[in-house]
Structure formats: C-alpha cells, structure tokens
Amino acid sequence: MPEYQKQEEFMDIQQDKLSYSIPEVTQMVGLCRTVIYRELNSGRLRAIKLGKRTLITREAIEEWLSTLDSYPMRNEEGKNV
Image 1: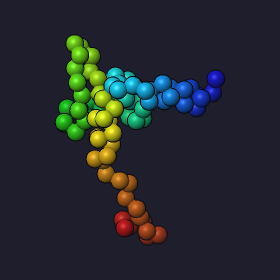
Image 2: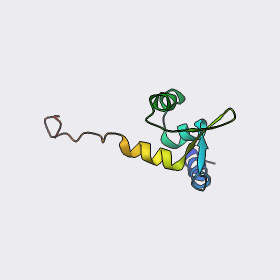
Image 3: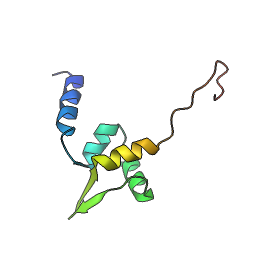
Image 4: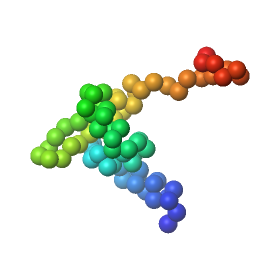
C-alpha cells in the first residue's frame, strides 16, 4: 500500500477520537515529539493525564493550531506585506 494511502487511512481512523496520544499528535500535525512537549510545557498546548499517559484532546489541538501565527505574505521584493 502506498504511503499516502496509509496516511489517509490513519487520518480517517483518527477523526473519530476525542483524545490522542503524543505519537498520534506528532503524526497528525507533522511535528516532532520535542516540539509537542515544548508546546505542552509552555502551556500553549493543553493536555490531560490518565495515569502515566498524556492525552491531548481534539479541542485542545484545534485551539492550539488556531493560535499559531500565519505564514507571512511577501511581495515581489521578498518583503512582508
């Protein structure tokens, strides 16, 4: 099975969940564990603990993503618009 089909299948399964593990979040958003833990430790991304497991709710992920800066638009000279 091609990699893109595996990714689509993974995302279809993930959309039904209310919370995600750190490895699932890294795959969903395309960032490494270090970045996710940095965001958690800074308080920008919220998580819940269940025993030793760290879970991040779908709501927390969507809220966190909405707070990130947009990629700056640039004009022909390469300057920010």
